[in-house]
Amino acid sequence: MAFLRYEDVLLQVNGESMLATSASVGVGADTVPVRLIDGSLHRYAPQGGIRGQLSFQHYLTGALPSFLNVTGVTEDTVAGSLGGITFSNAYLTSSSFSVSPYSPVLVNSTFDIYGPLGGSITSNYDAELKRSEYSHGIRSFVNGLGGQINTTLSFNYSVKADRTPVYLIGDTLPDRVAKQEVEIHMALRGNSIGSQLETAGNEANLVCNIFDINGTAPLQKFNCSGQITNQTLEVSAQGYLNGNISVTQAFR
Image (cartoon, rainbow, N blue to C red; front, side, top):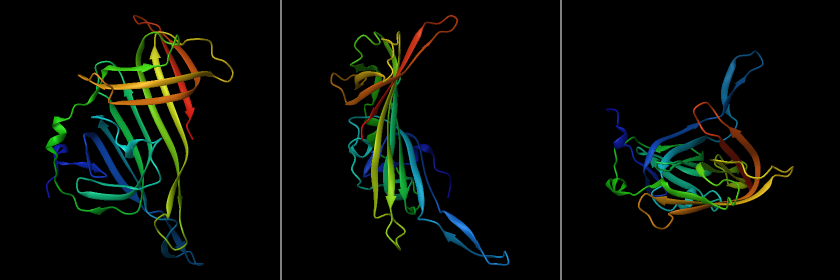
């Protein structure tokens, strides 16, 4: 079989085609050698079930799909395929994006996979993806800064969830994968760092409004209500003074 071009490799998650710029999926077996008393190799024994990871970067072409909303997802499993290779028992662990002038918004997502891959490599294409309108930094903005930063140059938003698999005796797939701590982080760059940082941090309630390039209403809003934990000022020759602040929210 010849190599497939990027245009012929389709990523689908829970039946939805993703306008991805890059993607990877892989699994591994956790095995250790078992040796006899004389040091000779007896066999290889598994220490756990097959585990892997799915990661991809895609254009935000509308409201964020429910399976990519870390703060809203339950412990339900996710399934899909990449280039015809199928995966199941996938659980979202992180999602992030950056917004800057004159650039589309790209979302990075990562899933933990429990169990083997299936299917076979096949060529596939979804013509509807080319008709998508994607979100853009030219109209997107942040609310809730108050007097902290008067002019925002760029911002990043990320969410991470800790996942813990629970195995029953004799099973190679987890009975459940519990979602535990969830943390939201935002980093903003602008013309200032705002008021002086206090020992316990400064309260911040931020809302990211994400628009497409022609939109009059936001495609999606992302919230971060937590504490400003870091402030940085920086300047270089032939440049301008920039301020950076970081906000962290313990969501769960």
